[in-house]
Amino acid sequence: MKHRIVFSILMSFILSLLMTCWVTWINLGWGPDFIDKWFIAFRLAWPAAAVIAFALGPFINITTQQIVRKIS
Image (cartoon, rainbow, N blue to C red; front, side):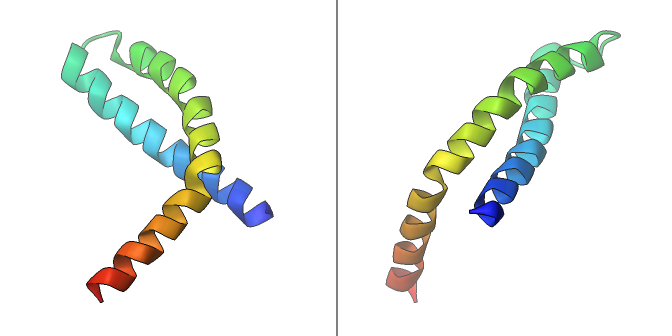
């Protein structure tokens, strides 16, 4: 369980950080308030991403195993 919690937190952190940066840049461009807008987006996205990663992790793991078995 510890592994699942830590993995969910770290994976959601990295993905939220990078994706909110990318989407903020696409939508607003690199302006003087970019960092502020990016941080707001990240602050809202990370908790949601962590909960989703934790909740759906087992389902995604099983689905991945099934896909890999079929293509092997």
